[in-house]
Image (cartoon, rainbow, N blue to C red):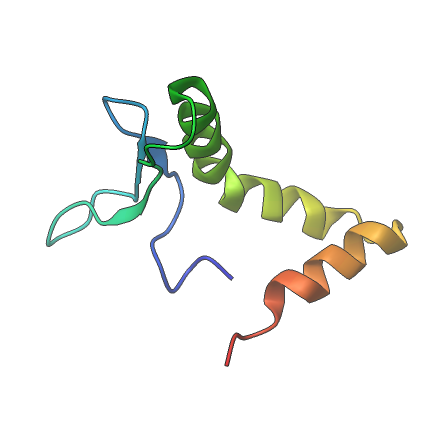
Amino acid sequence: MFKHISPAPWMSGGSGLTVWGYQQKYGQPLICNCENRDIPTATKRANARLISIAPQMFEVLMTLTDNPEAMELVRFMNKEKL
């Protein structure tokens, strides 16, 4: 799911409000920017940290093959957006 964006690890940026992908040949891609005036800074930083571990969380979910709820999440996350 995340391979088309950037391979893991992703990391939260210096301000804690951005998420950056793995350093590659042409630079480090910006995955997301959690900057928003209407959300407290602590929430923005928590969102960025949560997004930054998404690839690792997805890998863990994929190992839970005996858990139907986890498998449903994996199926949902693998759906392509049109």
